[in-house]
Amino acid sequence: MAGNNLNELDAFHDDGELNVIIETPKGSRNKFNYDEDLRLFKLGGVLPSGAVFPFDFGFLPSTLGGDCDPLDVLVLMDEPAFAGCLVRVRLVGVIEAEQTEHEGETARNDRLIAVAAESRLHRKVRSLGNLNETLLDEIEHFFVSYNQVKGKEFKPLGRFGPVRARKIVEEGVTRFKKSKKKSTPSKSGKRKRSRG
Image (cartoon, rainbow, N blue to C red):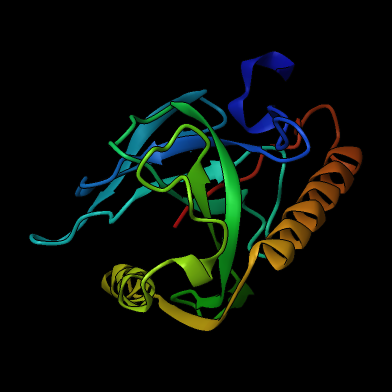
């Protein structure tokens, strides 16, 4: 791990599993973000009363998405983890989406869906097709309403399986490597992360 920056941990644990850093645990109203400059987790916001994260939410290190942040991952686990916990996961799919910021700028902000490698409850889940349609609708609705509260628009574009999800991860790894080559020593490749 370069310089103890969690975002520079390898994305792939091995050929079949990925490393995810949990930022916000399931059931939390608090939204936590990893701050690359401080190298710690800080409070990024609080959800309205009655709204909580449906599953653990984190990021895939050594990746960059279309929004120039590490790729987001929603992790299905038996019990909530904690901010900063490293969880090995297998991809089961992706909700591809566009996110429009306050200023009107639109970028891709896909939500990878994964299952913790050690999960007992979800061990048979291999693709989004193994999940209840209502659950997927609720996950999408969470991200739509979560962004709405922040004055942003989250527009789901489609749901796809693990093959498409892995391709997004591989593209994200390539994008990250290119960004590291372009960054100068004074900037250290650090980016402002709005995470969410």
